[in-house]
Length: 185
Image 1 (spheres, rainbow, N blue to C red):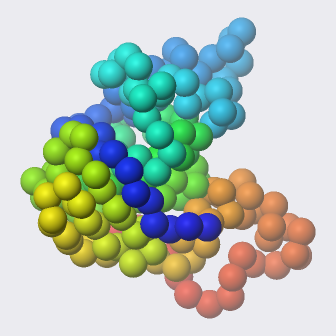
Image 2: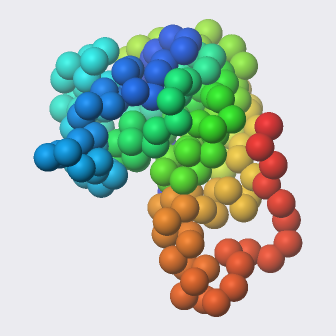
């Protein structure tokens, strides 16, 4: 997996809801059945905030968000849709359940970057190395270092999320990796 994404900044504020702001929960249903396919979900990401977001966003673009990104009901669909668009996430903070769902969705992220919203504006060109935690605003010549996710969680993301990690573990007949523990802040 290429851990370095370079693209446009999509800046959002604090308290974005999983069910209203990231994706409207009603949009995850097709004929009364919940859909978890990132290819389907990506067409609805952030459309309550920016109606043409899925058409304008490009793979490699980076969402920069304030505090409590992904608050509310613990639904993974918006994060799967972001993954489907090929986006990355850098946030000041996320709730504990959202932290877990970022990994499950296979979304490259730096979920705990205090005051990162002061370093980027909507439309800036960014480069983020999610494996090392390096954040660069190429438009403004600014950079920062954040704590990257633990290696065991990066491995799950590299496999495309928890479903693929589980498949791999079952196929190999053992744990995803030996040793090391991942903690949730």
